[in-house]
Length: 291
Image 1 (tube, rainbow, N blue to C red):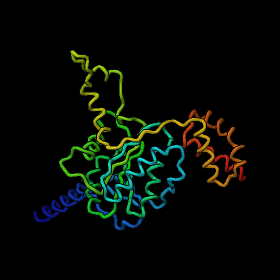
Image 2 (image 1 turned 180 degrees about the horizontal axis):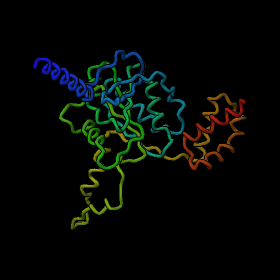
Image 3 (image 1 turned 30 degrees about the horizontal axis):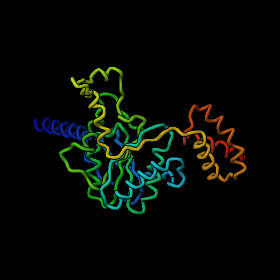
């Protein structure tokens, strides 16, 4: 009887161990916060979340970003206020693809890292863990930008509610050393359908009021204190960016001028005159020129 009881206890302990291994665990602080200026949040298959240092942070300077001076001034000003301990806003960067939204955030990280700025990249699927991430860094002396790139939600995704609560609406007080910076091609972050317009109501005096469906779709983006919009580049702006990138690859003025017709054809084939397309052309052209 004693042997059977002992085996039962052992099996119970094994079962408890397996259950504990798959239960959500508190997010632990990294062993060395000086390992990097940027971190990625990853949720393991076991359900454990970890902050991984980015060993090779992509270099980007504010001066290298052309034709977005207005947007650059707004983001840089807000970020500087943040690292100086002054009031600053969460930021939503929206607009045309490839126009420098995420590059601008990386450039701000490089510019203000010496003043204590750090970045934590969080994928959309893992935004439900935002409260744990904020809790871990809340007592650190550094300033943290929690960055989510190319953000958009489908109906009912759990990360939507988590982000909404962190931005404004949680019972917990906001943390002064954490801001949310997000980029998106959608201003309201949720898909919009023609049927949503049916929820609008009209008053007798002609006023139009959005219904609950519309209110819900704009409620998340409204919680970002600063909206910064990016627009498609004109032909001249596109060629200016091409020239800047070719110059960074060591091309002289004569070579840059000669490359312009090819740069326009490249953009036409891609169907876009964006900063990303300009950079990709410059890499291709510089590579061929140095062959």
